[in-house]
Amino acid sequence: MEKIPPRTVARLIIYRKILNSLIYEGVSHIFSRKLAEMAGCTPEQVRRDLMAIGYQGSTVSGYDVSELEYSIGYVMDDPEGVKIAIVGGGLLGRAILDYCYWRYPNFSTFLSFSNEKDISDKVYHGCKCYTMKQIEEVLEMETVDIVILAIESEHVQNLANRLVKSGVIGILNYTPIHLDLPSEVFVEDMDLMLAIDKAAFFVKHETHIKKKKKKKK
Image (cartoon, rainbow, N blue to C red; front, side, top):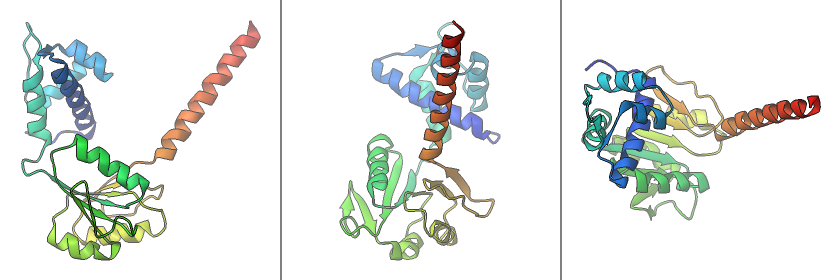
């Protein structure tokens, strides 16, 4: 199978969430038109994406929901599970851990690093919590696939450098700091405030337009 483009991967994740909901509702089959409508794209895009993972539906009954969800999972999931570490034991770090623990059973291992006294050296949701000083020591023993940075912005670049030196090649960055890391390291910036600012600008812009239209009337 050829390398799947990042945008296709993002849509496959959306399809999979939709399919999981349909399975829960007892839906057995779905056509590309309906799946596209639910995913916010076109039927042609759905068909191209699913052909990229080698799956084709029936012109008569559409896609078998359970089979398609399995096919996407076969391509997306590591059979050995994903090892994930969360750096930061504050409210954000714990919220992310809560969310991942209940919704993503394919994550085989959870680790947490924090200097919070009420969580360090304890077990939370079955997740062993270590201190920041133990990062190199623990990562030497555990091959971690993804690290989530949910800490204060100060010194985050230095921390990211430590993670990369310890073999980490996937980082989800919940800080507003741009990380300068080697090109082979995948970094996904998850800036909540940036998203809020975008939404606020859109609301302000639309409100301004509506006010102008009212004045014209």
